[in-house]
Structures are given as C-alpha cells and as structure tokens.
Length: 313
Image 1: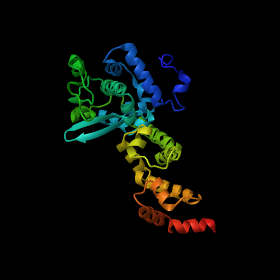
Image 2: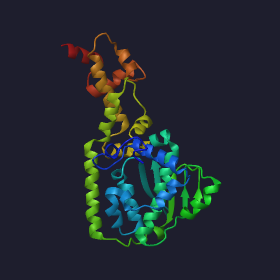
Image 3: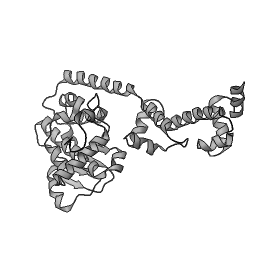
Image 4: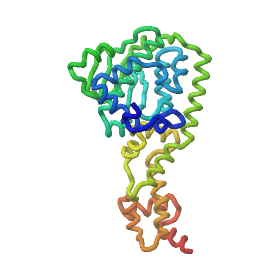
C-alpha cells in the first residue's frame, strides 16, 4: 500500500512512529480506491487490535473501567498523532465520546476523513468489547457525513441508533456501560502507564510549543499581513478550539502571539529607510496609524518615532 501511494515506509513515520497527514490522506485515498467499498473504514475498525493506540495501549488496558479507558485516548490523543482529536463528556446520565478529524484534513479530503472517522468510532466499540469481554453497544451514534440508505443496516448493526449529517461525530453510551469493569484492570500498571504517558506528552510538547509553531508560521509568511486563527489551526492540523486550548495550557493566546509578532516586525521595519509609519501600520494590519502608535507605545514604552530616533542615535 505504501508503494502504491508513491512513498516508502522509511519516509512515512518520524522517530515517534507518527504519520504525517499527507501520507495518511494518501493511504486512505488508495485504500478507498482499491477496496471500492463504502464501508471500508467501518470494517477496519471492527477488525483491529490495541497496536492502533500506540503509546497509550498499556494505559487503556489497565484502566479500571471503560470510561477511564476512553479518557486515556481522549487525554493522550497526541501520542497517537494529530489527525484526530478526541473528547469525553458526561452529559446528564450519558457518557459521550467525540471524534474530531483535523480541519485541514476535512478541507483537503473529506471523503477520507469520513472513512477514518468511521474507523475510529467502530474501533472504539471493538476495543471496548475486548476490554470488558462483553459486546458493547452504543445507545446512539452521530455522524457528520451522509449515510446512504443502502448502508444504514450495517451502521445500525455496529452502532445501534444512528443519525447522519450532524454537526459532530460522537458515540453516546449509558453510564452503566461506561462503568463496566475492564477485565485487565491493574491499578499499579495504570499508575505507571499514566506517569509514562504524561511524561511522553510533556516531552513531545517541549520539542516545540504551539506558540513557537505559530511564530514559525508567521515568520515564513510571504507578507506582513496576519492570518486568522482558523488558517493557522488548519496549517497545524488542529481544529480551532483545540489550538485555543493548547495555547491556554501554555499560558498564552492567539491574540497575544499576533501582538508580539506585530511589535517585533514593527521594530524591524522602523529600522528601514524610506518607509513611513503609516505604511508600517498598513503592512502589519492595524486599522489606523493611531492604533499602531498606541499599540507600539503600550508594548515598548515609547512611540514609533522615539524608537526610530533611538535607533539612529
């Protein structure tokens, strides 16, 4: 399958065993083309093992109950890659697991994103059945994509009640199901694996913060015009809400990063000859020269003019 997609296994994964989204999309496109089967994602999810969970496999298998097992791949989804973001929510007497393909993937290839979502959602049920040694059934499943009437029976067999063309992808479970014991539960192993995954996630985060990644994106732009947060989140293969959450964890936000970038670029432009302050304000996306003056003085303690004189001195 790698050869059919035009690349070899050595270039697919990084040192952490994660797959770049362009390879993931290419693989899914070839799987769909070769299989010529609309339920290929659903089929994959029903015939898979714990290797799909990568680093968090041990944590999931040693959890005390299914809810804790689901929480493991929601909290540590980045250890499996950044093509999906998972979220667990308790809603009244229900426990819901949400599945979010990254926004860039959805824009580039919605068909493969939908197949991969079917795969992830059916995988959740398959692994839950393994963990509890019972056939786990959802109360209801929501899908963003259209489910053809000819395929509804197959989806209903896997997920029970289904709804298509929804705003989100999610599986709804009863609390009784969520509280089912995991047959391989082991408190000591769980504690050890939780610490391992937390350290692994911290190490991954330290490699480069999301604030740094955004700054790199800003610096690589071919103009001084500032991008919107949805553009940046798409480049980072995250949905906007996820990026906002990750920046909050780093004690910053998108507006602060843009402001710092604007000031740094302003300082650079002010050192250049034959460029006026009003031109700098326009280049950096300020609404007016006055708003640029206010922002610069608030951040630097002096006006752009005073800064320019200081540079010349």
